[in-house]
Length: 207
Image 1 (cartoon, helix red, strand yellow):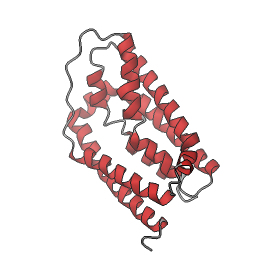
Image 2 (cartoon, one colour):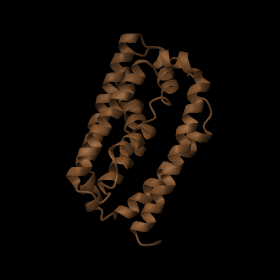
Image 3 (tube, rainbow, N blue to C red):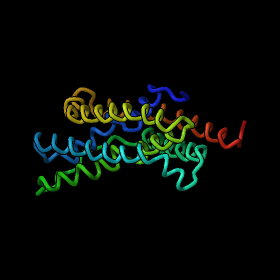
């Protein structure tokens, strides 16, 4: 197969960025107790899994419906990944927001859906990963068989990291997470340029 499973898994984990989401997650759930925060995590991951599942099963047909060639999506995906990498590299350390008075269970449900599930977990980046690999030239079945376990592992990692977010933040500190995000951004930037190159080759623009 053109793309190995571990390459796909590594891409999924970098784009999802579970470590980088910790400060923001803690800031928007700072007024919740542990039970409510854990419910938010579970709902967010389930919402995200539903969205990713829809794109995994229907992504190929979306591309065919709009007559988008794989090479074109490689280039657009590479550009988007580069923008994400640029933001990861040049972003400033995330700071906590002031808790909002009167937050309750209903509000926590909205928080789980937006912005946690969409767009922070199931955002444009990871949806582009799905669309890119289902248009990679492999059969639809083989692409799904590679992507499905990678996405499941990614979501499980996201769930585990968010559950342990307070502990991880104490261990690494804001600056530790900040540095890790920069390193992941550099790797993603290199991957994005390679993706653009592959798209240019696929479209026969360069040899």
